[in-house]
Each structure stands twice: as C-alpha cells, then as structure tokens.
Image (cartoon, rainbow, N blue to C red):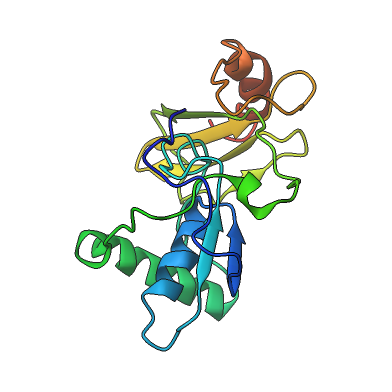
Length: 187
C-alpha cells in the first residue's frame, strides 16, 4: 500500500479534534467539520490508508437504510443519501489529510481483520427487503438490489489480526460458512 503522496507527520503539535480512522465515518466527520463555516477549530484524521483505497470502506457492508425505528436515525440516513447524490458538487478533497495512525504517538487498538463479502442473485427474492441480519456465527446478510443479496462473514478459523496489506482469502468460505446459514433464511 503506497501512501507516498500524503504527509506522514502532522503539520502542528495540537489539534482540537482528532479522528482515529479515516474510512466512512472519520472522513465524513472531518469533511463536515472542516466545511462548516461556524467551526473554526483544527481537525486531524489518523488512518492507515489516507487514500481509502484499501480502507474498510471497500470491504464493508456499509449501507444507508431508512427503516430504523428512531426518527433521528432515519433523518441521518436521508441526509446521507442526499449528500451522496450531490457528492461531486460538494466534495473538494484536501491533499494534506494526514496518513498514518502512528502520528498520534500512541498505539491504537485498531487492527485489520479478515472479512468476506459476496453478492449473489436469487430467482425468487423474499417478498420484502431484508434488513441487515446477523447470525450468532457472524454470518450476515441483507437485501442488496431487486433480486440480489449481500452476504458476509468472518473467517472460518480463528478471527485473528492480519497484515493490512494481506488480501488473501479462503476460497471455500462461502461454501463452508455462509451457505449453511443463509440457505435456512433465504430461499
């Protein structure tokens, strides 16, 4: 993973807001704070991959769903959906966003873990959208499109930390871990 175009040390020694993790939430919070005319404080984002090329964003089941019970959660999802629609017009990237967690001078309890995500079609989908459902085994699934489902799981064996550049995978994870669970839930 190359981060050579990003700074590896902070520009200053003190920040009012330090965000650990720059993926979806960290990047969004930093951008919204920095672009709020009423916010005149400094923000530091610390993440392993400032380019977001290998961050959790690409390997996660992030989604915006509006069927939450709490009104505030529905409003957050609606705002997020509208923000994404006008993203190109709103977003001007800052090339000086910091690059590595070590810059905070502390050890962070954040580590890379292997996760598997698959999208598959079905001939007869359930009669209504399936919200994110998590089985006690860690297998999770949700509706993804009209006839598709997104499914995922942690590894078959021990769930241990992996190197951030390790994108190897068990080719039998779907067959051995996911299918036995979801075939009971999705026809």
